[in-house]
Image 1 (cartoon, rainbow, N blue to C red):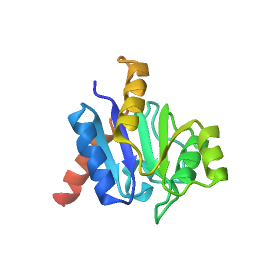
Image 2: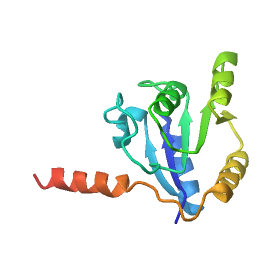
Image 3: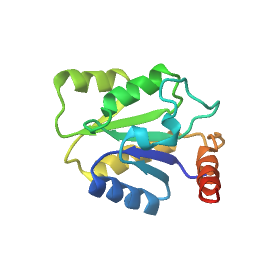
Image 4: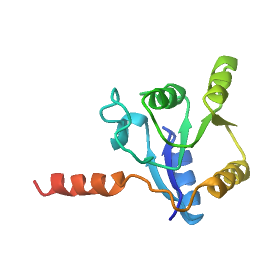
Length: 152
């Protein structure tokens, strides 16, 4: 089973570059311009919807127009998020933000970051993923919902 990665970021070029790079490296990648665009974030005020993790890894930008990535991750963790590996990236870290990110167990990347550094972190994450783990089937359900809406 491919490791599943969710990428959140409002920079189209960075988000697309990471998607292409990770697709080519054997990951299942889902990208969103901000957390509000992700079907997993509905409703955002409820606990985690699934028994199984929705993903193996979340990578999020911090400074996004709709929702701050640090607040997004903290909010999901408060609601029972089961994703084991999390990373935040920013070009404008505050001391407080940096400390908060580390406190909640996020890998921190300073933009611009070296892609090799991120790939090394992802490789280390991948080595720790139980190959027998079960992830939620939300991508299939989301796709089925989109198909249903198209046919209405």
